[in-house]
Image 1: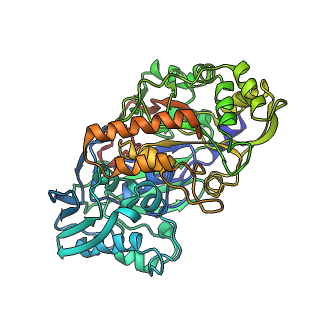
Image 2 (image 1 turned 90 degrees about the horizontal axis):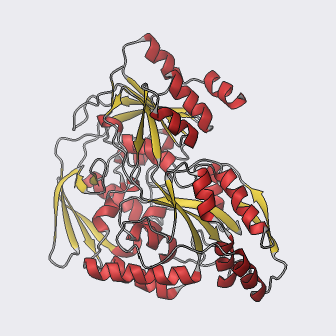
Image 3 (image 1 turned 120 degrees about the horizontal axis):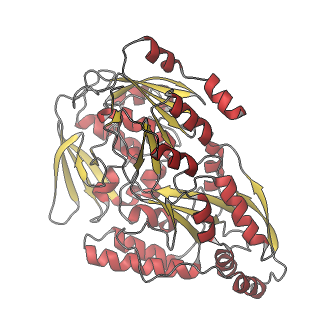
Length: 519
Protein backbone atom coordinates (compact mmCIF):
# COMPACT_ATOMS: atom_id res chain seq x y z
CA UNK A 1 0.00 0.00 0.00
CA UNK A 2 2.82 2.39 0.86
CA UNK A 3 4.56 1.75 -2.47
CA UNK A 4 1.30 2.43 -4.30
CA UNK A 5 0.80 5.75 -2.51
CA UNK A 6 4.39 6.75 -3.28
CA UNK A 7 3.90 5.91 -6.95
CA UNK A 8 0.73 7.98 -7.12
CA UNK A 9 2.40 10.94 -5.43
CA UNK A 10 5.33 10.96 -7.88
CA UNK A 11 3.43 11.35 -11.14
CA UNK A 12 5.64 12.54 -13.96
CA UNK A 13 5.05 16.12 -15.09
CA UNK A 14 3.95 14.80 -18.47
CA UNK A 15 0.78 13.38 -16.92
CA UNK A 16 -0.40 16.82 -15.89
CA UNK A 17 0.60 18.14 -19.30
CA UNK A 18 -1.46 15.41 -20.96
CA UNK A 19 -4.52 16.36 -18.94
CA UNK A 20 -4.14 20.07 -19.68
CA UNK A 21 -3.43 19.96 -23.42
CA UNK A 22 -4.30 18.11 -26.58
CA UNK A 23 -0.80 16.63 -26.83
CA UNK A 24 -0.76 12.93 -27.61
CA UNK A 25 1.41 11.51 -24.83
CA UNK A 26 2.30 7.83 -24.46
CA UNK A 27 3.39 6.86 -20.94
CA UNK A 28 5.19 3.54 -20.44
CA UNK A 29 5.44 2.16 -16.89
CA UNK A 30 8.85 0.53 -16.49
CA UNK A 31 10.06 -1.66 -13.62
CA UNK A 32 13.38 0.12 -13.12
CA UNK A 33 15.49 3.01 -14.29
CA UNK A 34 17.90 3.09 -17.19
CA UNK A 35 21.56 2.83 -16.23
CA UNK A 36 23.03 4.75 -19.19
CA UNK A 37 21.76 6.33 -22.41
CA UNK A 38 24.93 5.74 -24.42
CA UNK A 39 24.01 2.76 -26.63
CA UNK A 40 27.60 1.55 -26.95
CA UNK A 41 27.91 1.13 -23.20
CA UNK A 42 24.54 -0.26 -22.14
CA UNK A 43 23.72 -3.94 -21.73
CA UNK A 44 20.22 -3.98 -20.22
CA UNK A 45 16.70 -3.75 -21.56
CA UNK A 46 15.63 -0.91 -19.28
CA UNK A 47 18.21 1.35 -20.91
CA UNK A 48 17.77 0.08 -24.47
CA UNK A 49 14.02 0.75 -24.35
CA UNK A 50 14.94 4.44 -24.18
CA UNK A 51 17.85 4.48 -26.61
CA UNK A 52 15.99 2.54 -29.31
CA UNK A 53 13.57 5.45 -29.61
CA UNK A 54 16.42 7.99 -30.02
CA UNK A 55 18.99 6.12 -32.09
CA UNK A 56 18.94 3.81 -35.10
CA UNK A 57 21.11 1.04 -36.47
CA UNK A 58 22.07 0.30 -40.06
CA UNK A 59 19.56 -2.58 -40.10
CA UNK A 60 16.75 -3.41 -37.68
CA UNK A 61 14.24 -6.09 -36.73
CA UNK A 62 10.90 -6.25 -38.49
CA UNK A 63 8.00 -5.58 -36.12
CA UNK A 64 7.22 -8.70 -34.08
CA UNK A 65 9.96 -10.91 -35.53
CA UNK A 66 13.74 -11.17 -35.82
CA UNK A 67 13.69 -10.79 -39.61
CA UNK A 68 16.11 -8.11 -40.76
CA UNK A 69 14.89 -5.04 -42.63
CA UNK A 70 16.59 -1.81 -43.79
CA UNK A 71 17.00 1.08 -41.36
CA UNK A 72 19.76 3.67 -41.87
CA UNK A 73 21.09 1.45 -44.66
CA UNK A 74 18.61 1.21 -47.54
CA UNK A 75 20.21 -1.97 -48.82
CA UNK A 76 23.44 -3.97 -48.74
CA UNK A 77 25.39 -6.68 -50.52
CA UNK A 78 28.06 -9.19 -49.56
CA UNK A 79 30.94 -10.75 -51.48
CA UNK A 80 30.91 -14.40 -52.51
CA UNK A 81 33.33 -15.33 -49.72
CA UNK A 82 31.08 -13.68 -47.10
CA UNK A 83 33.78 -11.27 -45.90
CA UNK A 84 33.10 -7.93 -47.61
CA UNK A 85 29.85 -6.11 -46.85
CA UNK A 86 28.78 -2.89 -48.59
CA UNK A 87 26.02 -0.83 -46.97
CA UNK A 88 24.22 1.76 -49.08
CA UNK A 89 23.01 4.50 -46.76
CA UNK A 90 19.72 6.34 -46.74
CA UNK A 91 20.13 9.86 -48.22
CA UNK A 92 18.81 13.05 -46.68
CA UNK A 93 18.92 11.88 -43.05
CA UNK A 94 20.09 14.23 -40.30
CA UNK A 95 20.88 13.74 -36.65
CA UNK A 96 18.80 15.62 -34.09
CA UNK A 97 21.57 18.25 -33.78
CA UNK A 98 21.46 18.94 -37.53
CA UNK A 99 24.62 16.99 -38.40
CA UNK A 100 24.24 15.13 -41.72
CA UNK A 101 24.12 11.35 -41.55
CA UNK A 102 26.61 9.84 -43.99
CA UNK A 103 29.34 7.24 -44.29
CA UNK A 104 31.80 9.41 -42.34
CA UNK A 105 29.36 9.45 -39.40
CA UNK A 106 29.08 5.66 -39.53
CA UNK A 107 32.88 5.39 -39.72
CA UNK A 108 33.26 7.59 -36.62
CA UNK A 109 31.07 5.20 -34.64
CA UNK A 110 32.84 2.07 -35.87
CA UNK A 111 36.23 3.64 -35.09
CA UNK A 112 35.00 4.41 -31.60
CA UNK A 113 34.01 0.78 -31.05
CA UNK A 114 36.96 -0.80 -32.82
CA UNK A 115 39.88 1.32 -31.62
CA UNK A 116 39.03 1.50 -27.94
CA UNK A 117 42.56 2.14 -26.68
CA UNK A 118 43.38 5.81 -27.03
CA UNK A 119 40.01 6.51 -28.59
CA UNK A 120 39.44 10.28 -28.36
CA UNK A 121 35.68 9.78 -28.05
CA UNK A 122 35.77 7.51 -25.05
CA UNK A 123 38.68 6.65 -22.80
CA UNK A 124 38.88 3.12 -21.40
CA UNK A 125 35.35 2.26 -22.47
CA UNK A 126 34.15 -1.30 -22.06
CA UNK A 127 32.13 -2.05 -25.16
CA UNK A 128 30.64 -5.30 -23.91
CA UNK A 129 28.53 -6.02 -26.99
CA UNK A 130 31.35 -5.30 -29.42
CA UNK A 131 33.83 -7.44 -27.50
CA UNK A 132 31.88 -10.19 -25.74
CA UNK A 133 28.44 -10.52 -27.32
CA UNK A 134 29.05 -10.01 -31.05
CA UNK A 135 32.78 -10.75 -30.93
CA UNK A 136 33.42 -7.96 -33.44
CA UNK A 137 36.81 -7.23 -31.88
CA UNK A 138 37.99 -10.55 -33.34
CA UNK A 139 35.81 -10.56 -36.46
CA UNK A 140 36.04 -7.13 -38.10
CA UNK A 141 39.25 -6.44 -40.01
CA UNK A 142 38.62 -2.91 -41.24
CA UNK A 143 35.96 -0.39 -42.24
CA UNK A 144 36.04 2.10 -45.12
CA UNK A 145 34.16 5.08 -46.50
CA UNK A 146 33.70 4.32 -50.20
CA UNK A 147 31.67 7.44 -50.95
CA UNK A 148 29.34 9.67 -48.89
CA UNK A 149 26.57 7.07 -48.94
CA UNK A 150 28.53 3.80 -49.14
CA UNK A 151 30.17 2.18 -46.13
CA UNK A 152 32.21 -1.03 -46.32
CA UNK A 153 32.97 -3.55 -43.58
CA UNK A 154 35.60 -6.21 -44.22
CA UNK A 155 35.58 -9.27 -41.98
CA UNK A 156 38.46 -11.60 -41.18
CA UNK A 157 36.15 -14.58 -41.62
CA UNK A 158 32.65 -15.21 -42.91
CA UNK A 159 30.08 -14.94 -40.12
CA UNK A 160 26.61 -16.46 -39.90
CA UNK A 161 25.29 -14.04 -37.24
CA UNK A 162 26.98 -10.87 -38.57
CA UNK A 163 23.91 -9.10 -39.97
CA UNK A 164 21.62 -9.94 -37.00
CA UNK A 165 24.37 -8.71 -34.69
CA UNK A 166 24.46 -5.36 -36.49
CA UNK A 167 20.76 -4.91 -35.72
CA UNK A 168 21.41 -4.95 -31.98
CA UNK A 169 20.61 -1.75 -30.08
CA UNK A 170 24.21 -1.19 -29.01
CA UNK A 171 25.38 -0.63 -32.61
CA UNK A 172 23.20 2.44 -33.03
CA UNK A 173 24.78 5.34 -34.88
CA UNK A 174 25.45 8.40 -32.71
CA UNK A 175 26.00 11.94 -33.95
CA UNK A 176 29.76 12.51 -34.40
CA UNK A 177 29.30 16.01 -33.00
CA UNK A 178 27.70 14.59 -29.85
CA UNK A 179 30.57 12.11 -29.54
CA UNK A 180 33.12 14.90 -29.74
CA UNK A 181 31.28 16.97 -27.12
CA UNK A 182 30.63 14.14 -24.64
CA UNK A 183 33.93 12.35 -24.18
CA UNK A 184 32.95 10.30 -21.13
CA UNK A 185 29.26 9.51 -21.53
CA UNK A 186 26.46 10.40 -23.91
CA UNK A 187 23.80 9.93 -21.25
CA UNK A 188 23.52 13.66 -20.67
CA UNK A 189 22.97 14.43 -24.36
CA UNK A 190 21.99 11.40 -26.47
CA UNK A 191 21.72 12.49 -30.11
CA UNK A 192 20.63 10.09 -32.83
CA UNK A 193 18.56 10.01 -36.01
CA UNK A 194 15.53 8.28 -34.50
CA UNK A 195 11.84 9.16 -34.35
CA UNK A 196 12.16 10.76 -30.91
CA UNK A 197 14.46 13.41 -29.46
CA UNK A 198 15.78 13.39 -25.92
CA UNK A 199 14.18 15.97 -23.58
CA UNK A 200 15.12 15.03 -20.02
CA UNK A 201 16.12 12.21 -17.70
CA UNK A 202 15.08 12.64 -14.07
CA UNK A 203 16.99 9.72 -12.61
CA UNK A 204 14.87 7.27 -10.70
CA UNK A 205 11.65 8.87 -11.96
CA UNK A 206 11.22 9.27 -15.72
CA UNK A 207 12.70 9.91 -19.16
CA UNK A 208 10.86 12.26 -21.52
CA UNK A 209 11.18 12.13 -25.30
CA UNK A 210 9.61 14.39 -27.95
CA UNK A 211 8.54 13.41 -31.46
CA UNK A 212 11.09 14.25 -34.15
CA UNK A 213 9.16 16.34 -36.72
CA UNK A 214 11.94 15.83 -39.29
CA UNK A 215 12.21 12.07 -38.95
CA UNK A 216 13.05 10.47 -42.30
CA UNK A 217 10.37 7.81 -41.79
CA UNK A 218 7.62 10.32 -41.06
CA UNK A 219 6.65 12.03 -37.84
CA UNK A 220 5.48 9.62 -35.09
CA UNK A 221 1.77 9.45 -34.28
CA UNK A 222 2.39 10.57 -30.69
CA UNK A 223 3.84 13.93 -29.62
CA UNK A 224 5.67 12.77 -26.54
CA UNK A 225 6.82 9.52 -24.95
CA UNK A 226 7.46 9.23 -21.22
CA UNK A 227 9.13 6.19 -19.67
CA UNK A 228 8.15 6.25 -15.98
CA UNK A 229 9.97 4.28 -13.31
CA UNK A 230 7.51 2.43 -11.06
CA UNK A 231 9.42 -0.35 -9.32
CA UNK A 232 6.51 -2.14 -7.68
CA UNK A 233 4.41 -4.40 -9.93
CA UNK A 234 1.17 -3.74 -8.08
CA UNK A 235 1.76 0.01 -8.12
CA UNK A 236 2.32 -0.07 -11.89
CA UNK A 237 -0.94 -1.95 -12.37
CA UNK A 238 -2.78 0.54 -10.15
CA UNK A 239 -1.47 3.39 -12.30
CA UNK A 240 -2.55 1.57 -15.46
CA UNK A 241 -6.06 1.02 -14.10
CA UNK A 242 -6.25 4.69 -13.10
CA UNK A 243 -5.21 5.79 -16.59
CA UNK A 244 -2.04 7.49 -15.34
CA UNK A 245 0.08 5.27 -17.58
CA UNK A 246 -0.83 3.70 -20.91
CA UNK A 247 1.37 0.62 -20.92
CA UNK A 248 3.27 -1.55 -18.44
CA UNK A 249 5.65 -4.48 -18.28
CA UNK A 250 6.01 -7.36 -15.79
CA UNK A 251 2.51 -7.52 -14.31
CA UNK A 252 1.78 -9.91 -11.46
CA UNK A 253 -0.01 -13.09 -12.63
CA UNK A 254 -3.21 -12.15 -10.79
CA UNK A 255 -3.21 -8.76 -12.52
CA UNK A 256 -2.92 -10.43 -15.94
CA UNK A 257 -5.98 -12.52 -15.15
CA UNK A 258 -7.84 -9.41 -14.01
CA UNK A 259 -6.82 -7.46 -17.11
CA UNK A 260 -8.21 -10.14 -19.42
CA UNK A 261 -11.67 -9.40 -18.02
CA UNK A 262 -11.39 -5.61 -17.98
CA UNK A 263 -12.73 -3.97 -21.18
CA UNK A 264 -10.48 -0.95 -20.55
CA UNK A 265 -7.32 -3.06 -20.69
CA UNK A 266 -5.63 -5.44 -23.10
CA UNK A 267 -3.00 -8.17 -22.73
CA UNK A 268 -0.19 -8.53 -25.27
CA UNK A 269 2.31 -11.40 -25.28
CA UNK A 270 5.96 -11.02 -26.23
CA UNK A 271 7.23 -14.07 -28.16
CA UNK A 272 9.69 -16.14 -26.14
CA UNK A 273 13.38 -15.47 -26.72
CA UNK A 274 14.83 -15.49 -23.23
CA UNK A 275 16.39 -17.57 -20.49
CA UNK A 276 16.62 -17.02 -16.74
CA UNK A 277 19.47 -18.86 -15.04
CA UNK A 278 21.43 -19.35 -11.84
CA UNK A 279 25.14 -18.75 -12.31
CA UNK A 280 28.17 -20.03 -10.41
CA UNK A 281 31.54 -18.38 -9.86
CA UNK A 282 33.92 -21.17 -10.76
CA UNK A 283 36.87 -19.36 -9.23
CA UNK A 284 35.24 -20.48 -5.96
CA UNK A 285 36.60 -24.02 -5.35
CA UNK A 286 33.17 -25.37 -4.39
CA UNK A 287 31.58 -24.32 -7.66
CA UNK A 288 34.56 -25.33 -9.78
CA UNK A 289 33.37 -28.90 -9.18
CA UNK A 290 30.76 -29.98 -11.74
CA UNK A 291 29.36 -32.43 -9.20
CA UNK A 292 28.37 -29.55 -6.92
CA UNK A 293 26.76 -27.63 -9.78
CA UNK A 294 24.84 -30.69 -10.97
CA UNK A 295 23.78 -31.51 -7.41
CA UNK A 296 22.29 -28.04 -6.91
CA UNK A 297 20.51 -28.30 -10.26
CA UNK A 298 18.91 -31.59 -9.17
CA UNK A 299 18.06 -30.12 -5.76
CA UNK A 300 15.98 -27.34 -7.36
CA UNK A 301 12.30 -28.08 -7.95
CA UNK A 302 12.09 -25.73 -10.90
CA UNK A 303 8.78 -27.07 -12.17
CA UNK A 304 7.05 -26.35 -8.86
CA UNK A 305 8.48 -22.83 -8.76
CA UNK A 306 7.55 -22.06 -12.37
CA UNK A 307 4.03 -23.42 -11.89
CA UNK A 308 3.53 -21.37 -8.72
CA UNK A 309 5.13 -18.05 -9.66
CA UNK A 310 5.06 -17.54 -13.44
CA UNK A 311 1.30 -17.30 -13.97
CA UNK A 312 1.23 -19.73 -16.87
CA UNK A 313 3.71 -17.73 -18.98
CA UNK A 314 6.85 -19.73 -18.14
CA UNK A 315 8.29 -23.16 -18.88
CA UNK A 316 10.96 -25.15 -17.06
CA UNK A 317 14.14 -24.49 -19.08
CA UNK A 318 16.09 -27.52 -20.29
CA UNK A 319 19.10 -25.76 -21.79
CA UNK A 320 20.64 -22.34 -22.31
CA UNK A 321 18.53 -21.45 -25.36
CA UNK A 322 14.87 -20.65 -25.89
CA UNK A 323 12.76 -23.47 -27.37
CA UNK A 324 12.50 -23.35 -31.14
CA UNK A 325 15.83 -21.61 -31.69
CA UNK A 326 18.38 -23.05 -34.08
CA UNK A 327 20.57 -25.46 -32.11
CA UNK A 328 17.97 -26.23 -29.45
CA UNK A 329 18.62 -29.91 -28.72
CA UNK A 330 15.27 -31.66 -28.26
CA UNK A 331 17.09 -34.83 -27.15
CA UNK A 332 18.13 -33.18 -23.89
CA UNK A 333 15.53 -33.93 -21.18
CA UNK A 334 14.51 -31.74 -18.27
CA UNK A 335 16.88 -31.68 -15.32
CA UNK A 336 15.36 -34.21 -12.90
CA UNK A 337 14.30 -33.01 -9.46
CA UNK A 338 16.03 -35.55 -7.21
CA UNK A 339 17.13 -34.25 -3.79
CA UNK A 340 18.28 -37.72 -2.75
CA UNK A 341 20.70 -37.99 -5.66
CA UNK A 342 21.75 -34.38 -5.05
CA UNK A 343 22.75 -35.17 -1.45
CA UNK A 344 24.75 -38.20 -2.60
CA UNK A 345 26.55 -36.12 -5.22
CA UNK A 346 27.38 -33.38 -2.69
CA UNK A 347 28.77 -36.03 -0.35
CA UNK A 348 30.90 -37.50 -3.15
CA UNK A 349 32.23 -33.99 -3.84
CA UNK A 350 33.34 -33.66 -0.21
CA UNK A 351 30.33 -31.86 1.27
CA UNK A 352 28.35 -34.50 3.21
CA UNK A 353 26.99 -31.77 5.49
CA UNK A 354 26.54 -29.20 2.75
CA UNK A 355 27.93 -25.68 3.04
CA UNK A 356 26.89 -22.02 3.30
CA UNK A 357 27.02 -19.61 0.38
CA UNK A 358 25.87 -16.13 -0.51
CA UNK A 359 23.04 -16.20 -3.06
CA UNK A 360 22.48 -12.93 -4.92
CA UNK A 361 19.12 -12.14 -6.48
CA UNK A 362 18.15 -9.33 -8.83
CA UNK A 363 16.47 -6.21 -7.39
CA UNK A 364 14.20 -5.70 -10.41
CA UNK A 365 11.69 -7.92 -12.17
CA UNK A 366 12.78 -9.22 -15.54
CA UNK A 367 10.86 -11.25 -18.15
CA UNK A 368 12.57 -14.47 -17.10
CA UNK A 369 12.40 -13.75 -13.33
CA UNK A 370 9.05 -12.03 -12.62
CA UNK A 371 9.60 -11.92 -8.84
CA UNK A 372 13.31 -12.50 -8.17
CA UNK A 373 13.23 -12.31 -4.38
CA UNK A 374 10.43 -14.85 -4.00
CA UNK A 375 12.03 -17.14 -6.59
CA UNK A 376 15.37 -16.91 -4.77
CA UNK A 377 13.68 -17.79 -1.49
CA UNK A 378 12.04 -20.84 -3.09
CA UNK A 379 15.32 -22.03 -4.63
CA UNK A 380 17.17 -21.62 -1.37
CA UNK A 381 14.48 -23.54 0.51
CA UNK A 382 15.10 -26.44 -1.90
CA UNK A 383 18.84 -26.18 -1.41
CA UNK A 384 18.46 -26.14 2.37
CA UNK A 385 16.81 -29.55 2.11
CA UNK A 386 20.13 -30.97 0.85
CA UNK A 387 22.25 -29.06 3.35
CA UNK A 388 23.21 -25.97 1.32
CA UNK A 389 22.40 -22.83 3.29
CA UNK A 390 21.92 -19.49 1.49
CA UNK A 391 22.67 -15.99 2.68
CA UNK A 392 20.29 -14.03 0.43
CA UNK A 393 21.57 -10.67 -0.81
CA UNK A 394 20.78 -8.01 -3.41
CA UNK A 395 21.76 -4.45 -4.32
CA UNK A 396 21.00 -1.63 -6.76
CA UNK A 397 20.46 -2.96 -10.32
CA UNK A 398 23.32 -1.07 -11.96
CA UNK A 399 25.76 -2.10 -9.23
CA UNK A 400 24.40 -5.65 -9.29
CA UNK A 401 25.34 -6.08 -12.94
CA UNK A 402 28.76 -4.49 -12.52
CA UNK A 403 29.64 -6.76 -9.61
CA UNK A 404 28.31 -9.87 -11.37
CA UNK A 405 30.59 -9.13 -14.29
CA UNK A 406 33.44 -8.45 -11.85
CA UNK A 407 32.92 -11.99 -10.46
CA UNK A 408 32.20 -10.76 -6.93
CA UNK A 409 29.35 -13.20 -6.23
CA UNK A 410 29.63 -16.95 -5.59
CA UNK A 411 26.08 -17.63 -6.85
CA UNK A 412 23.73 -15.23 -8.56
CA UNK A 413 20.56 -14.96 -10.64
CA UNK A 414 20.66 -13.38 -14.05
CA UNK A 415 19.11 -13.86 -17.44
CA UNK A 416 19.17 -12.95 -21.08
CA UNK A 417 16.67 -11.75 -23.63
CA UNK A 418 18.04 -12.47 -27.08
CA UNK A 419 19.13 -9.53 -29.18
CA UNK A 420 18.70 -11.05 -32.61
CA UNK A 421 17.31 -14.61 -32.57
CA UNK A 422 20.64 -16.25 -33.44
CA UNK A 423 22.01 -18.91 -31.04
CA UNK A 424 25.42 -17.23 -31.17
CA UNK A 425 23.86 -14.31 -29.32
CA UNK A 426 23.12 -16.62 -26.40
CA UNK A 427 25.84 -19.24 -26.36
CA UNK A 428 28.88 -17.21 -27.40
CA UNK A 429 28.05 -14.60 -24.79
CA UNK A 430 27.52 -17.24 -22.11
CA UNK A 431 30.45 -19.54 -22.87
CA UNK A 432 32.53 -18.26 -25.79
CA UNK A 433 34.66 -15.81 -23.88
CA UNK A 434 36.90 -16.43 -20.89
CA UNK A 435 39.29 -13.80 -19.63
CA UNK A 436 40.49 -15.30 -16.36
CA UNK A 437 40.18 -14.35 -12.74
CA UNK A 438 39.77 -10.66 -12.04
CA UNK A 439 39.06 -9.70 -15.66
CA UNK A 440 35.52 -8.33 -16.16
CA UNK A 441 33.50 -11.14 -17.72
CA UNK A 442 30.24 -12.87 -16.80
CA UNK A 443 31.73 -16.21 -17.84
CA UNK A 444 33.94 -18.02 -15.29
CA UNK A 445 33.76 -21.41 -17.03
CA UNK A 446 37.01 -22.27 -18.81
CA UNK A 447 36.12 -24.89 -21.43
CA UNK A 448 38.22 -24.82 -24.59
CA UNK A 449 36.17 -27.53 -26.30
CA UNK A 450 33.02 -25.43 -26.09
CA UNK A 451 34.81 -22.24 -27.11
CA UNK A 452 36.19 -23.95 -30.21
CA UNK A 453 32.76 -25.31 -31.15
CA UNK A 454 31.23 -21.86 -30.76
CA UNK A 455 33.89 -20.19 -32.89
CA UNK A 456 33.38 -22.76 -35.64
CA UNK A 457 29.63 -22.14 -35.54
CA UNK A 458 30.13 -18.38 -35.53
CA UNK A 459 32.32 -18.50 -38.65
CA UNK A 460 30.04 -20.81 -40.61
CA UNK A 461 27.27 -19.73 -42.97
CA UNK A 462 26.04 -23.32 -43.40
CA UNK A 463 22.77 -23.78 -41.47
CA UNK A 464 23.09 -27.54 -40.98
CA UNK A 465 26.68 -27.30 -39.80
CA UNK A 466 25.79 -24.60 -37.29
CA UNK A 467 22.82 -26.66 -36.06
CA UNK A 468 25.08 -29.65 -35.43
CA UNK A 469 27.74 -27.60 -33.64
CA UNK A 470 25.23 -25.89 -31.34
CA UNK A 471 23.66 -29.23 -30.44
CA UNK A 472 27.12 -30.49 -29.49
CA UNK A 473 27.59 -27.43 -27.29
CA UNK A 474 24.27 -28.11 -25.56
CA UNK A 475 25.35 -31.67 -24.77
CA UNK A 476 28.60 -30.58 -23.10
CA UNK A 477 26.89 -27.76 -21.22
CA UNK A 478 24.29 -30.15 -19.85
CA UNK A 479 26.99 -32.51 -18.56
CA UNK A 480 29.06 -29.76 -16.94
CA UNK A 481 26.18 -27.51 -15.75
CA UNK A 482 28.15 -24.20 -15.67
CA UNK A 483 24.79 -22.46 -15.15
CA UNK A 484 21.40 -23.82 -14.12
CA UNK A 485 18.91 -23.02 -16.91
CA UNK A 486 15.81 -21.96 -14.99
CA UNK A 487 12.92 -20.71 -17.13
CA UNK A 488 11.88 -19.48 -20.55
CA UNK A 489 8.87 -17.17 -20.69
CA UNK A 490 6.35 -15.55 -22.98
CA UNK A 491 6.19 -12.26 -21.08
CA UNK A 492 2.79 -10.54 -20.81
CA UNK A 493 2.45 -6.80 -21.35
CA UNK A 494 -0.60 -4.77 -20.33
CA UNK A 495 -2.00 -1.69 -22.03
CA UNK A 496 -5.03 0.55 -22.02
CA UNK A 497 -7.49 -0.59 -24.67
CA UNK A 498 -6.97 2.54 -26.79
CA UNK A 499 -3.26 1.85 -27.35
CA UNK A 500 -2.64 0.53 -30.85
CA UNK A 501 0.44 -0.07 -32.98
CA UNK A 502 2.67 -1.50 -30.25
CA UNK A 503 4.34 -4.64 -31.62
CA UNK A 504 5.89 -6.94 -28.99
CA UNK A 505 9.21 -8.21 -30.30
CA UNK A 506 10.99 -11.33 -29.01
CA UNK A 507 14.15 -9.25 -28.55
CA UNK A 508 12.21 -6.55 -26.63
CA UNK A 509 13.31 -4.11 -29.37
CA UNK A 510 9.94 -2.37 -29.45
CA UNK A 511 9.55 0.98 -31.15
CA UNK A 512 7.14 3.71 -30.10
CA UNK A 513 7.07 5.32 -33.56
CA UNK A 514 4.08 3.20 -34.64
CA UNK A 515 2.08 3.67 -31.42
CA UNK A 516 -1.22 5.56 -31.37
CA UNK A 517 -3.19 6.63 -28.29
CA UNK A 518 -6.65 7.50 -29.57
CA UNK A 519 -8.56 7.83 -26.31
